[in-house]
Length: 217
Image 1 (tube, rainbow, N blue to C red):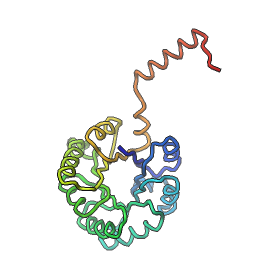
Image 2 (cartoon, rainbow, N blue to C red):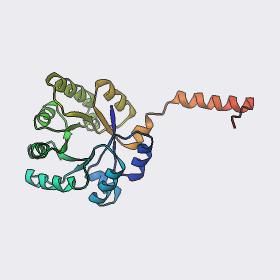
Image 3 (cartoon, rainbow, N blue to C red):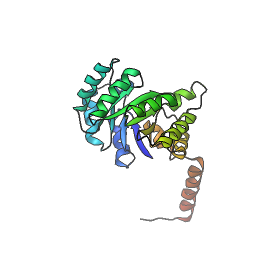
Image 4 (cartoon, helix red, strand yellow):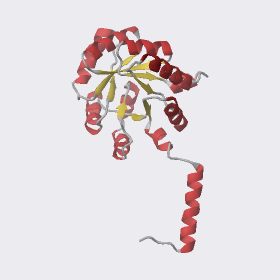
């Protein structure tokens, strides 16, 4: 499973990228706002750091305007994936841009039916939102499972990109289901290393090493 980092924080991306934990990056207007930087400037810097796809989202609502914005974003770097919303206009923009050979990430997916439409429109990635469904007392992981089954049934090439990841548990569950990609905030990816028994065992090892006077160098 590929790891995309869901942030526009350059230092957070660099830290994970140096460890080989970054296969791509996803951004959105909210993350760009949080970074406090110009969208074209920060996206260019991310693209120069990361080899994999970098999703940059349009802000227009009409298809023709999305296409225009998408083409502007594509000028930034060869690894840009234009991010469009799962609306009828977004699907129209997706079809045009993917037909021109560009990567498109269709976002804000909340149903299997929407995911089918995105695949039919040629989406490179479909981004179903787990956490936001969980907020409504709907199991977001069920949606990941449904999309995986449908895509496998018909051989759709669209990559299943699990989004709105809220916990390390989401990451492992998506991996078991067979998501192609998970995009998560840096703190969630780092939390995957945490376990109380690891901490407890390490504390004991350190204590025993000190008691025994063990030194390596």
